[in-house]
Amino acid sequence: MQEIIQALNSTFLTLIPKEERANSADKLRPILLYNVIYKIISKVIANRLKPIMSRITSPEQGGYTKG
Image (cartoon, rainbow, N blue to C red; front, side, top):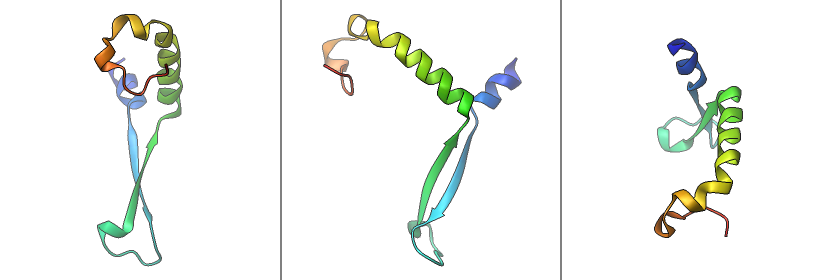
């Protein structure tokens, strides 16, 4: 079970060059590739929590929420 959980949480970092022949870190753009199953599970959990978020968070903690 532990191996499955770790596999779902794995993320791959890919560096995309901003320009041709990028030879330093500031000329690379990092892109994180998440596991598809992890993204689906995260979205399902977020959608199920949406209706109760206003009841379980204080008004000061309401950043990035609708309303």
